[in-house]
Every structure is written in structure tokens, then in C-alpha cells.
Length: 109
Image (tube, rainbow, N blue to C red; front, side, top):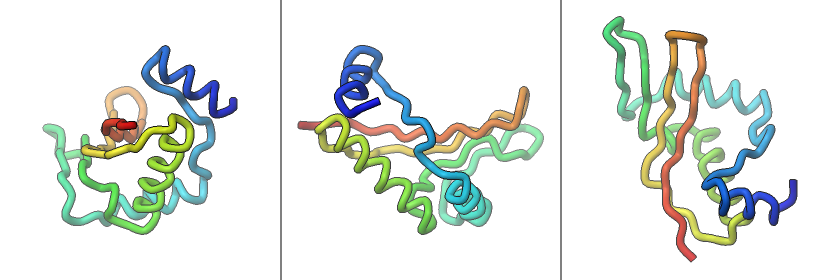
């Protein structure tokens, strides 16, 4: 899909998805950095398992690169400046082990 299609999809749906944004090697590095993260907001469920981690975007080299790449792609595809104000990694352990990264921000012209 080209830039214009991503922009059109964002304007109609409020989001777009980029397949294979991160390669497997970088995913492994990011997960390794997350395991040893300090100075982040970590939330546990009642069984003392990690449920959510917030404020991790700058806690390791790969996480910093991911943040910069994310901002760069959004600015390039949508032609708008991005400001990230919240990031979190959600962990769903009830059904399947799924981690969902979420980055919240706003766009300006």
C-alpha cells in the first residue's frame, strides 16, 4: 500500500496498519529490553503477573529506535507532526499470551 492509501485509510477509519513494521530480530531485542526495564510504570494482576507496562518508549536503544521510527513513519505517511504523550504494553494472559503495544499521541499540521 502506498502513502496516499495509508492517509486515506486513516482519514476514513482513524487508523492504519503497516504489516511487518518490525522484523523478528528487533522484536527479540525489544522484548529483552522490556524484561530489564527500570523506572517504568508496571502494573500487575491479582496473581502478581505483569498486566501492563507504561513509559517504556525510551528505556533501551531498540525501544528508542522504535519510537523514532514510529514517529517518522506517521509524519511521512500523514504529513503531520506527531507528539506521543502515552505509551504502554498491554499483556493479555487469559486467552493467549498476547502483547499489544499502544502509543497515544496527537497530530498537528
